[in-house]
Amino acid sequence: AQTVTQSQPEMSVQEAETVTLSCTYDTSESDYYLFWYKQPPSRQMILVIRQEAYKQQNATENRFSVNFQKAAKSFSLKISDSQLGDAAMYFCAYRRGSGGGADGLTFGKGTHLIIQP
Amino acid sequence: AAGVIQSPRHLIKEKRETATLKCYPIPRHDTVYWYQQGPGQDPQFLISFYEKMQSDKGSIPDRFSAQQFSDYHSELNMSSLELGDSALYFCASSSPFPGREVAEAFFGQGTRLTVV
Image 1 (cartoon, rainbow over the protein chains, first blue to last red):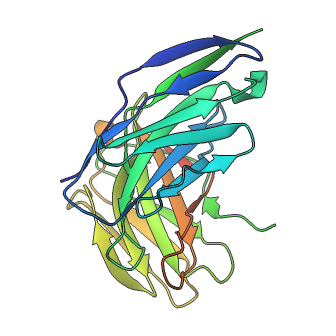
Image 2 (cartoon, rainbow over the protein chains, first blue to last red):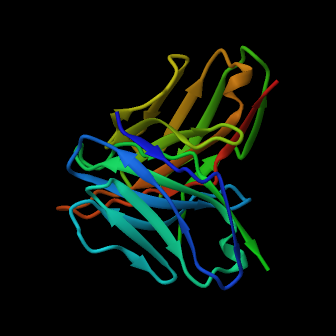
């Protein structure tokens, strides 16, 4: 079974600074997808960024980018120019690629990101 | 844009009672997922449906059952409720994807179930 590990229960960063959240995963699959979800105090789950395992190029979405190291099974999230609205719980998630797309996500335990004004 | 609709938003039940949670996916989405998130926990995948058929199964207790109807809405039925079932229950939906595109799952706002 696949597992997702987020080793940082909490991170704090000054507004406008850059922060990196760590995520490692374990799987025997070769085809899979990785995601970062944001959960603000409203508890809404919001997709931040996604990465297909077969793509070597790291995904980027505006101020958010990932460092995907497939051999090391590492998938870190970098947030540049941190804003107060980025404060939330961030979950790393994995989904296997086979199965037609209806497979469930496996989440890490989450990292609580605090933005200091 | 239309989002995933879950009802009710809040539900209070007593132990051993039954609860039914409903999920209305985004129009033209044919895949529905259910997740359970306990207090301070990460979401745990329960079950998914694709074209009204069960697709994947996670850590769903035997006391729970779910189905997807002809209009693609889904219901999660929970019987013999226990205190430990108190949690936020998310439904998510996605649309079919051709080739190797990623089917992004869009989450509803959740149903907060409290068992007393």
